[in-house]
Structure formats: structure tokens, C-alpha cells
Image (cartoon, rainbow, N blue to C red; front, side, top):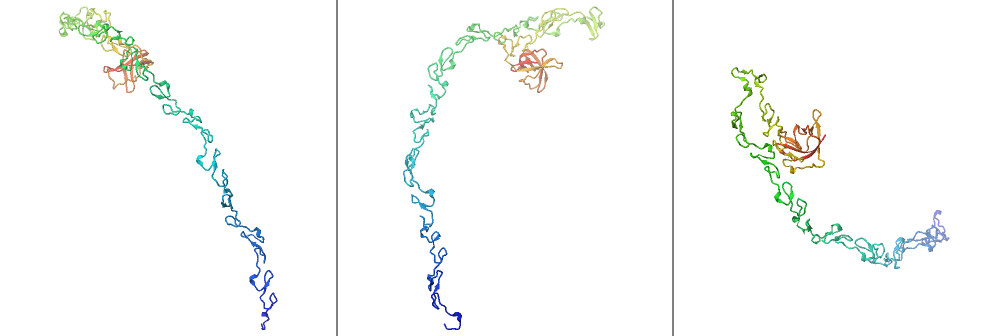
Length: 473
């Protein structure tokens, strides 16, 4: 090139050719072909032969280049096991089964049999032996002997001890097994009565007579006499009491007291009330009786004053003339003290007799008595004698003067209100009600001793049930 610029003058290339294009590459090779210029290998060496394998390892030894595993992964650790499974988990590698097959499902059961059928695996028997033949029977007994297996009893219980008796009753209690009755029937209800008759009809069983003889014909009459002779049976007296001694007198009054039998009056009438007056006139009209008043004998009608004779005097308290001459009592004694009692008898004075009293039935001169059970009648044959054992008790209280005489309220008896004719019988002692309120009833009993008493309450003449009480201080 012809110019005046030395700066653009051509120079020789690496081959010595001026203006040539040959260049020395990094490996010292001089040519004009850039395509064959050396390059750096994986280790950075220009023109080096180190090569990075598929795992990125850079060296010049192809013998150690990594390879692909069974999954195709270079440098991978996946391995194909004996069953052809490719993975990198050695824990799931297939194993040999009991028959030597890799990955097989044959299993040896507890009896050593190797197969893949679980339905025929041996099992434990009731004794715990694998493949054993022991069996538990219905009672839970485990053995291999079927001859001793338990059986059902009559109630259907396995191994039970219930047994059907001769009547077909099934239980385990031999004490209630049916027995033969007197007729030989199992479970029959025929019974031999005390007379030896065997049947099932209790209505015809023989009974004891009053003498205690089974099947005997002795009978107690209404008085309690027991024998087989009806001709000597007691009879009722006029009061209706069996064996009683009450007799109806000529006036028709029925009792057992001959002292109160009616008598003939002066007119001859039984039970009549005709009386002969002092003049001997016999009638029942006292208004026409003639009288001889001893006091009248002392009064001087003419002078209208007391006679001044022996036996006459003026009574200042009575303001009249009185006679000192004694009068006859019912016994005929002058100045006597005999009188007629409620039974019509002349008692007291010189008679030697006492006045009749009311019995428990309220009859003057009657012989009815309250027995120990509180029953009031004149028949001693029906009297009870023994009080109950350990009766309830009531306490005896002190009266206002500190003397024992009151008893407290009797439990079990109630009154609607206080009534004058209400009273209590302690045995045969009639006791009037002393005090009264809703809670307390007191009775004044001055002469009642401690002990057992049949107590009854009477209201309006009606008697309550009798109850026994023990009277205590």
C-alpha cells in the first residue's frame, strides 16, 4: 500500500507473511483458521483434555466417568432388587418367602405349614396349644375328651344341678322335693286327720271334742260342762244366764237375791204398795192416812200454846212445839235408827242388816260383779282370771294435798265433751272425772292400790272396750 501513513503499514503475520492473516492461538498454533483455535478444557487449561462427565466431574480419566443407574439417573443409587424393582430404598427390597421364592407370599403358620392360604393356618386350642384339639365345653372345661363334656340339667342350665322330682318340679333344692301323701300319690294333698282318715277334704277332718278326744262326741254346754250326756246340760235362768241362779219372784222381778223378793202388801197384793195407816186402814193413798203426830199432842189448841206437860217443849229453832216422845222406826223400835234402804229392806238400827248397794250394772242389791276383764254380770262361770302380760301403765299422781289420789290421762280413751254421767271403772271401783281439758283427764282415786286393773270408760251408760293397765306411782 502506497501512502504516506506509516501507521497503517502492513506487518508480517506469525508465518512471516506481510499482510498475512495467520494468528497464533492460545496453544501457540499459527494459522489463519480461527475455527481450529484451541479452547480451554473444563479445568481451564487451553487445549487441555479434561472433560466434565455427566455427574460434573472434570478430569482427563474417562474410566471414572459416572454412569446412569437403573432409573437412568447419572450418578444415581437406584438398584434393581431380586424382584426387578428399581429404587434407592434397600429396606423394601424383596425377600425370599418360606418356599424360597423372592417376593413370594407363602408364610409358615404356627404349626410350620408353608403356603400362601391363610384360611388353613393352624389355630390355638382352648389350652393354648397351636393346632391342638382341646375344646372348651358349655361349662368352660377345656380338654380333648368329649366324654366328660357337661350336659344341661332339667332347667336348661349347662352343668346345673337342678333335678326334676317325682312331681316334675325342677330345681336344685332337694328339701322341697314332693313326697307321697297318705294315699301314696306323689305331691298329693291327701292328709290323714287325727282320726286316721286319709283324704284331701279338710272340711271333714275330725276335731277334738271339749274333752280333748279326737273325734269324740263330748260337748260343752252353755255353762262350760263338758260331757257326752245332753240330759244334764245347764239351762237359762230367768235373766237369760246359762246356769244362773236368778229366780223370778211373785212380782216378776228376776235376780238371784232372795232378800229383795217382793212381798204381799196389807191388801194381799204381791209387790203392792198398800199400807195400813195408824188407824188400820189399808190402801195405797197416803193422803188419807190418819196420823198421830206426837208434836201435835203437845200443842194446846185452846190456848194456842205449848202444853206444860212432861215430854213437851218449845223448839226455838223450829218455832214450834215438839215432843220428846220417841217414834218407832221400821224395825218397831221406839227412837230406833233403822230405815228402809233402796231395796225396800229395813236396815240399820237393831236389825243387824246393812243397806243394799248398787252392783256394777247399777241394780240396787244386785249381785253383778266386774271380773278382771271388766265384764259386768252375775255369772261367775264366765269370769276371766288372768290379766295380760306386761300391760301398759299409768302413773298415780298426788292430789293438791300431796296425797296419792289422781291418775293421769288414760291413753286410748277419748271423750267428745265432759258429761256428768261419764266415769271410769278401775276394776269394780267407779271413778268420777275430777279435771278435764283437751289434753289431760284426771280421776280421783283415793283408795286404789298399785297393780293391774281392767279399765273401761262409761259415757251415757255405754261401756267402751276393756283395756288392761298397770297402776304405778
